[in-house]
Image (cartoon, rainbow, N blue to C red; front, side):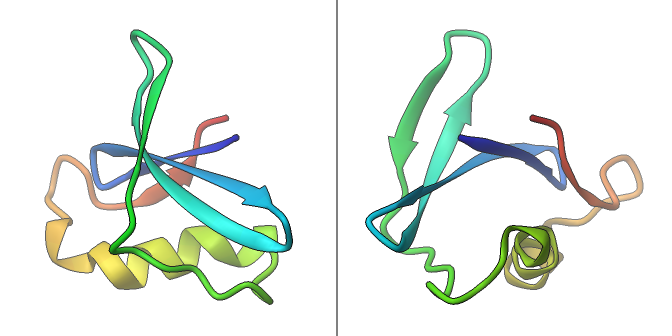
Length: 72
């Protein structure tokens, strides 16, 4: 599971059967809930995911959380 800090929110991304799956991540309890309304193109590389998440969630950016960063 790839974990990103997306403007202060933890999002997990996992590759399964040639597809990218997206999850809400609770890192304290290591629980992940699938998010079905967010899609990552199947042909996207791992290196492109942070930029894609930034494009999707850009309205959530704040001075305190201005970036998308992979944390795991």
